[in-house]
Amino acid sequence: MKALVVDDSGVMRRIISRGLNSLWVNDIAEAGDGMEAIEVFGDGVGFDLILTDWNMPRMNGLDFVKAIREAGHTVPIIMVTTETEKEQVVKAIQAGVNDYLIKPFDQEMLRLKLERVIPNPTV
Image (cartoon, rainbow, N blue to C red; front, top):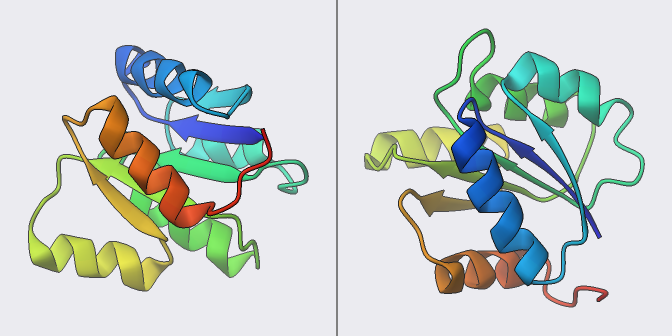
């Protein structure tokens, strides 16, 4: 299983990547903002999951999600962010995220979100 982790914090990318590795995601690509993520994602072939932050320079997570969805990609996307206002959550869902994970989170919360968007992962 291959995931794309998008966050402007290298520390947060490592935290998320380690969490994914301890579950069933064994191939992880990283990007520091939405523009870099679009380059890394490319045509999307081979990606099974995206986890993206909201607040990033150059292109934020919400605009990144919109770009992915407008290009016709259906890969599951989890927004991993500190944005907790109901209005922000609604915006993210309307843009096409499949689920929402609030920072800070623990391994169990990450596992539950993954199981929600990928119910039968191939290990």
